[in-house]
Image (tube, rainbow, N blue to C red):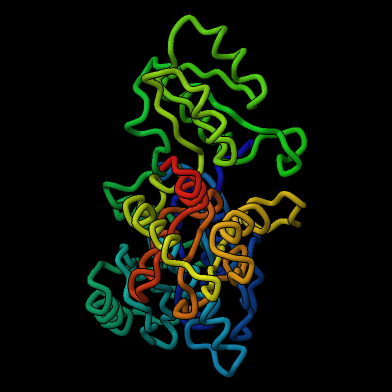
Length: 386
């Protein structure tokens, strides 16, 4: 990884009706042709993302979406994609077309929504001022007036975004409360068939970088070299952070007084609702051979024979519950709207998603009364390690 992962960037989502100039705004802010622009309504059919660095905001990702007023069966699917993109938003830019003066209908959101009146050259004087007041009343915030084609108002828009960033926003720390500055951690990272050639998987990379930033000391090894690594230390490590699959083996090697956890559990605590996940794991005891479990992966990949989500966790569950236990797997942003057919949802660590998107899925499960947990929490529970 040579760039800040998208999951750790501020998410700014452009939302509005078709042909309001969302794609033009994205291009204007990015300073380059990122999204296709035309006068034909519905040009943007899927979300378009642009990762960038903005002074005063740092690493962020700007996401263009399909129009919220799209029509027909295909249009409803596009609107669904836009609604999904809004779940990850830290800030929403509600783009309004000055030529039509229509107010887009956004879903209820718990993040700042900034009205942006675009195509300002097509509505001037008293009409523009009246529309500005209408937009401010609709969204409860002052509106920024722009004309994306000549970049008029873009700097004012960026400043409005800077001022709207929630004070408590930041990419969550994985190791908060686990280690203090200067303390020693041992990271145990199996390099099996699932490990990408020539690099570390994202949770490992993020943890190492975070511990370096926090001035912690780090020793890295795989499970086979852990005993030698521990023997070489002059002090007892404060924590051992390991792949979930080797927690049982490491428990027997762990020095007294050393905290043991997994990368997946750290992700569950930083991005999700760890208490809800811990409680959700208890649903494993209520599963029967007729139950159904949904396993949700954030990333998309071609599974290997030892894939943790598609092979190992289902095998662990079936060895406990029975071979007829139903298991469905979804990946990426595929996630059923209706979870009522499932007795348990098991989510991956979600290193590819930001915290707001994970919490949106957690909230969906809570509202539908379906228990939800996490890969690492599940494995720890099944091995009596939680």
